[in-house]
Image (cartoon, rainbow, N blue to C red; front, side, top):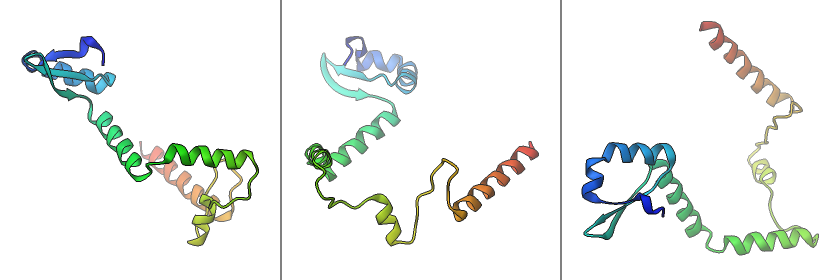
Length: 126
């Protein structure tokens, strides 16, 4: 934590709106103290949400780093694949991915055409 972002709760109270603005705009974090001891950290809501999501992922996948290393090792060794791809998972439900390179199948082209028409209508109304 940057030492200039440590301040007393009393000082923070005087500049609360300024501190909140800095936290939101610059992703700054502030350590607020009471009688010189750390009491609370102030950060933007989006930064907090990001930390929460990271913690959830760590809880859901406690061995994620090990699993990634193992997967990369398997890929490097050309080991027979025992992993399911996203395309395979979607195919089980009759779904497909739509690429953005203009080489989609007929269904995805119709979906894109609808989107383009809608965009033109919105643009024309302005």
